[in-house]
Image (cartoon, rainbow, N blue to C red; front, side, top):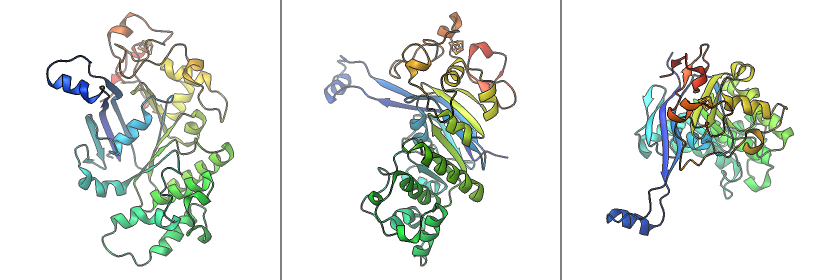
Length: 337
Ligand code: SF4
């Protein structure tokens, strides 16, 4: 069966060259400053099946959020392809994306920043639905109340404003808003990392219950291994904008193959403990995305690096059982298309 979401060789680069004067000098042929390109996402490929949860994990700044925003086309991709339900949406403009956005919703890390402070909750949750409705919606108030009930909020909450809610309640509002259009895919970008640990569990359980009820898929982004283990069917590990390992949850946790994944797991073995800063988990600094290392992106910090690692970029290769890794130590596998 065709995957719900298929992402192929996706790339996202940002030109952060200096001032307008630098650009003018470049245009006039008198280049005094080199172009500065952030290589945020570097040839990432993955698929998500209907009803599946793909957890995306990695340290802060590894490109997870940029990847998510590129998939949903808040950023236009600079390379590669995105297909949703068999439709190639890579080149879709704003208008052609409107019906697609109904199928693909996003939940953000900061629920307060993502909710309009001047709108009442009933208007917030119904906004995506009304934007996509073909005509007048007579039962809009009842629909809003039904959505709020789905996420554990009552009739009395419908006329309040976002500032009158706790962080957990605001995230429930964000979830109800995403649900209003009955999406096929929800991209959740660190949806619980700003919440207290006790509230995190409630929101995660709510998200899983809703997935089971409605049958949609999640691309679930987090830096917390215990969260990704709780919620995911499969896991993707990102480093410096590259997907370095993917596989079923149990394969990643019980038999991690990439030295970066092994270091992450070794550094965060305790339930509820977020990944430590890179310096604590792995020796050395994360290289700049402005100046990627040659060869393997992890080679400057990898304790197992050898000569070939500096000369040749490893590609993601299948190791069987849906488990794939990009590391020259596991070269026998078959390249993942
Ligand atoms: Fe380490 Fe080399 Fe494997 Fe990269 S390719 S993770 S540097 S052993």
